[in-house]
Length: 253
Image 1 (cartoon, one colour):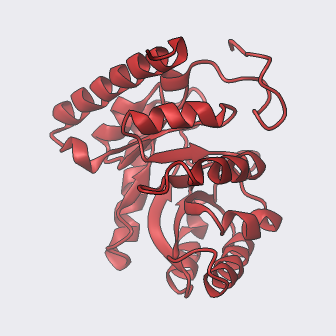
Image 2 (image 1 turned 60 degrees about the vertical axis):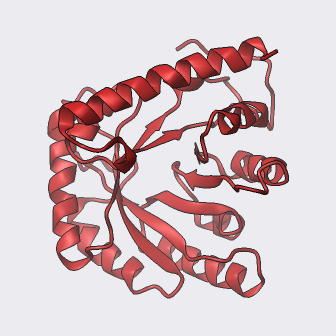
């Protein structure tokens, strides 16, 4: 018999899949062209295992330490069909060596120095047999130019895109963005789609557009998102601290 938590997650996941399916139909897009990425940050590996049993194979994390633990804890159980781990949160350069061992992709690359750190770390990991493929990189773009928020300013985009594309062990996958607080999602995602089309002119393989979360996934799909990052609608309110630290406190904000 499934646990209460498993039933809860199954029902929530089904609802989100229905939303995504409807959004794709409305936008005239194929559902297979949009990845649903459950964001499992601050939730335990047991929740990841439930999602895996429900057919999910890709997961998003925001903190290197927590993600590293989960990747290690689940690797043995998912050996037949390994999970793909996406780093979607801000990444410090000194964490590149760790992330290079388990990340399928990084959605939040926002500086030349981070790109160089990742290139060095992935090159080393490939040489030491700790990974077998290049690392997929998405450039995070700021849509409002706020220096206090993550993402590069648009006038930096061409240089960073070219830097990733010229890196031996990194693969330019596309772009990522989070709409500014209180901004119109449709306008923000339309802006992002314009930037993406500009990148595709010289880098036609950079087809990924990571955009859309629980509250705005429909708008993101309308404007070409290929990956929606959904946490709360699937797993509920996030714990205040990660399972690496504690699992006793729940936030309802």
